[in-house]
Length: 358
Image (cartoon, rainbow, N blue to C red; front, side):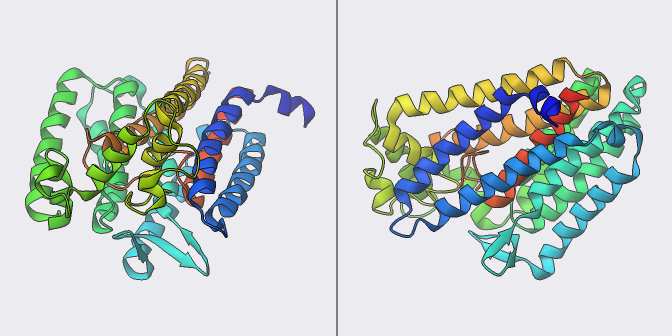
């Protein structure tokens, strides 16, 4: 056991814990007297850490050599997403959670891991046949199932992340340029169809309001404007923990989840924003190192999928805070409050540790 622990990439773990610490500091400053979410996040961190250590003990090559475990895991994630349509609880306008007593569980976080493993398995078995368009179509069907269920739950942010995972893995697996162009055209067609027939009015407003939030400052543009005010008011050094006016007075929406980046920048300033970005960059570099040293295509694509998931989710979250992306409602990895997302991320780190040590 001790020898195994020595082989783990502790710099990767350390960078993830530092990111969680940024979130914990923000939760502490905005948590009020009871600090309920702060205490819960500490618990989720402990559970995630021990789950990461436990998963790292398993040989990932079981997943590489046997298809059944991945297919079963993917099937369970699809069933959990489908079950939300009947048993789900609406939180912040999306039907994306199961409520079990005081705990809420978000199955899409499990689905992200499942789609990474499934696509890595699929393409690693067919990497010499990537020139065949049918493999791209088949992989798209695997991604389309969770995407369709996420759309029905009105969870646009996770939709973008899952599509990014699929596109990123297909590119790294070796897709042809002409096929990539065809995918781009197909994606544009799907977006236009969704815009006209699937998206709700408030979802369309979120996409359009980020271009000109001042046109509706009390409606669709409110979240974007308040986030910009929070970021701008932080200055170089920030107002100090617990001193943020946008956060403390309730002007900034969802300061512990979707807009926690704005809350951090308001209280920690430009310096805090840069430190947070440096931590993310360092974590991504550690994942890239595991990717480069992976011993087979399956391991390489799993690491690539996790890298794409982290990058896309971070960019979307920070982008909507800074006004360069529409408001989609998606947490900042490791930083935002939420047990499902945090535990899933540490579980994925556990898989990467297994790839590193075996």
